[in-house]
Length: 162
Image 1 (cartoon, rainbow, N blue to C red):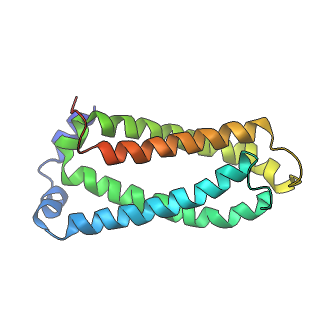
Image 2 (image 1 turned 60 degrees about the horizontal axis):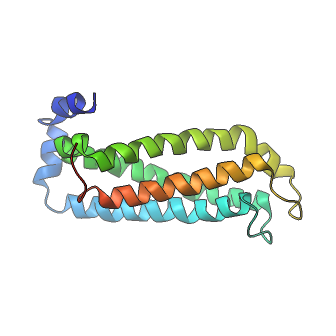
Image 3 (image 1 turned 60 degrees about the vertical axis):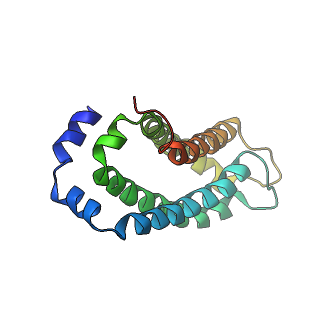
């Protein structure tokens, strides 16, 4: 499925523009890194607090980091799509990229679970109490999946293609 989509866009004007614009790829890399910094920087604080660490921080106060996390994710989504368009055949068969996308999907499902189940608990949670089990599971799942996304993203140029 991914390969057939890649084949359908390989000759697109967007792909040709990305490949022909010599300065664009480095700018996308920098933007992707900034997005990753915002995303993971905020999530590390949020997730560690949800897991029961950093108890000096009010759980509800971690909500102030969510706009930075959302901005980081948006930057990574946009630049990630542009990376794929820039070299669709390479990415579509790369096992590191494929596993990375599976982890992003798991992280998205985990984020939905956070919003549906954990977020309502955190708004009323006393900071002196232990975090609920569901919050700990969501926090450690988030930390694990995003760490995997980071590592696999970095390994894409080096791992096998199929």
